[in-house]
Length: 389
Ligand SMILES: Nc1ncnc2c1ncn2[C@@H]1O[C@H](COP(=O)(O)OP(=O)(O)O)[C@@H](O)[C@H]1O
Ligand SMILES: [Mg+2]
Image (cartoon, rainbow, N blue to C red):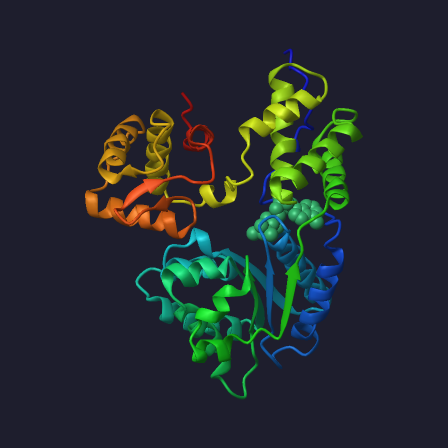
């Protein structure tokens, strides 16, 4: 069979996914080392203390990938020493409730534990018992914790840390990496949570500069693309534009690289050329953070698509009344064969999208999109929902 040549290696697309953890992290290796050094007592003096560290930094500064890499290394060190350490990573944006959050933790740590029929606090205690019975230590990353605290409240942090703080004379088994885009959420914690939270160490990741982005892109190109398909000139071009338009957000750089490669394939080019990058830029908005949209639930996505379509049709409008968006939403639901939710639920969905920083709502509860072109959002969601027009 004749297969068309692609600029990507056979598994190249996977290497450009935001979930992927590359073997090397240029310009974050030092942070990984410092984190591992800080967390090492979990393995060397198991149970002595519950370690807590906070990582802050704007989006695309490598917080998530650095925490995951640190987790991998910690698991490996523990394994080599014959100790049991599990790394679990929970994105708080993807978990709507306390129960869902605890469920996700358990799913990664002890998938065999039954979760149905228990409340979140009971589940936490079951988790604690499990760790004790298996002489196992947990390194838990609560990613985007500020979002969780803003939308769901602070009590989960309180409960999780209390779990480890209240027990005396038994080993400490749960250690935390907290991740947040900024430290502002610390100010809203109550004194009792704050005293438990007490991160002993804090790392603030600076945005990448052009040279650093070039190193990151160079590594990723080697992993994901066939030889000679992406020149140094293209890498420089993407790095420069990421600084200029994307605030040094590594996610935007990788999105551009991926989109440019897909355009080269679409047009049957043997390599990526600058015009592909320019087209990719037109289609990719640095303010549209794919990972924030992917984790939305289905009806949040459908409502967002309805809003994007409505605004794309009404280009002069900043805000649209929810009734108008609701009509579009009902049409979208029909198109995707979903049962639409009622008015009250729709209001709740809109509020959640606002809390996630994806839409804006004015004082009359009219909805708007302020950072991203409506058509770009529309196309992105259609692809995501699997039925582009
Ligand atoms: N130093 C780095 N080396 C390689 N890839 C990186 C590096 N920093 C970030 N990335 C990549 O950039 C994207 C965004 O990084 P991420 O860790 O999700 O940022 P944050 O969590 O700070 O928003 C991911 O695809 C990630 O793999
Ligand atoms: Mg992240």
